[in-house]
Amino acid sequence: MSAPRSKTVAFVSAVYPYPADNGKKVVISGFLRFLIDSVGAENITYVGLGTFDRSMAVPFRTVTIPLDGATRRLGSVALHALMLRRKSLQEALLFSPRAQRRLRPCIEGIDPDIVIMDTIRIAQFFEKVISKTPRRRW
View 1 (tube, rainbow, N blue to C red):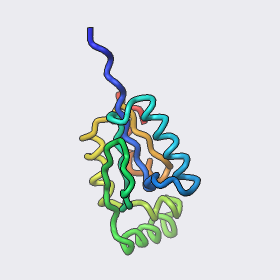
View 2: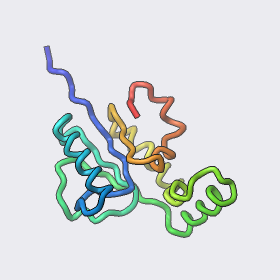
View 3: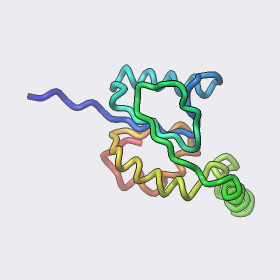
């Protein structure tokens, strides 16, 4: 009888946790230490939205999804937050159709058992797919 397979985790964030030099990064890096101890670094993929200085080595796999340019994202703020009032300013500033088109297939390719989103701003990218993946925990 084979040993049970470890859970795989995708952690999605717009903040790279290292160096842990502010409150949010301290919390995220602590949570990642917990995950490393729980499921093993080889079972974690950190999916970052935007660009990051990744000069610090990490024990887990990282993937970067670029965001749309500043002009397009400011247009999103004007449309979604100010005119339509469907998103908060923070959600609208992060929202990027380009990132959404890349993020969903990225998660499908990783095929994690668990997807952790660091904020509601990240959850907006997955609103339409959560109900379509009942075996995955979000």
